[in-house]
Amino acid sequence: MPGERTRGPIAGLVLAAGTSSRMGRNKLLLPLGKQSVVRRAVGTALAAGLEPVLVVLGHESEAVQAALHGLRYTPVLNRHYAQGLHTSLRTGVAAVPATAQAALVLLADMPRVTADMVRTLVERYRATASPLVVSNYEGVEAPPMLYDRTLFPELLALDGDGCGKRVVKRHREESLQVPWPAAALADLDVPADMDVAQAELGGA
Image 1 (cartoon, rainbow, N blue to C red):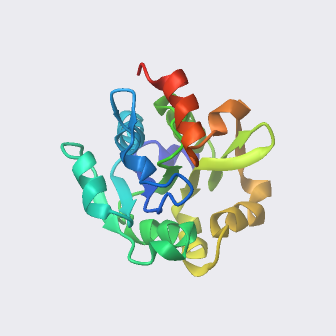
Image 2: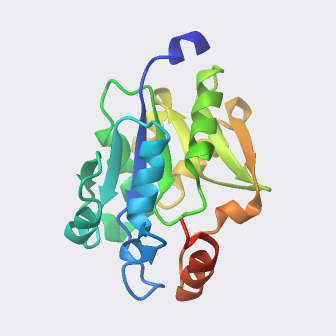
Image 3: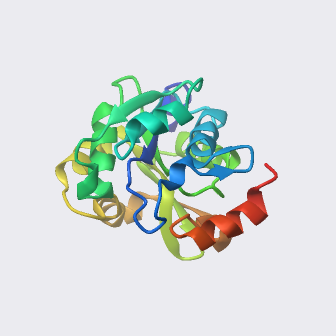
């Protein structure tokens, strides 16, 4: 019941294991404003009150951990990161502690996602009985997404790219859709994306 959701912790899963092949170097270590891309993402999860915050690592994991020095997070190593994003999702979900009611999944390369956006998803989850809260960017469903613990077995059982979205499709009638402007969906794939983000967010 919704009332039972008001106290339990919501874990944060920051997926930060990719190879950044299109960027040509590890985009998560690039500076964006006063901090690195990955530090900004983990800081967003922490500022939103997610507990614990698990960061799924893979490519250049030691360097990424160094970039996160001093932050209160739990590293989770995905040894199969080269096989795709779905392996990081499964690895992260498997590491969520039993005390967490749900997991909120964020991608480390979406710098326009704010702590307020994350808090809004958590608030919607706590106020309802929905097992799934989905960000909708003017018709595009994408992270951050919040999955209730009851959906964890499905996330762990599915394989292949898009497994998280398949769970969303399966439970769409039960889900809550939270609308955001399309501009907030922009991620960092190629050097030009970094140039735009620096111009827009570099002062923060």
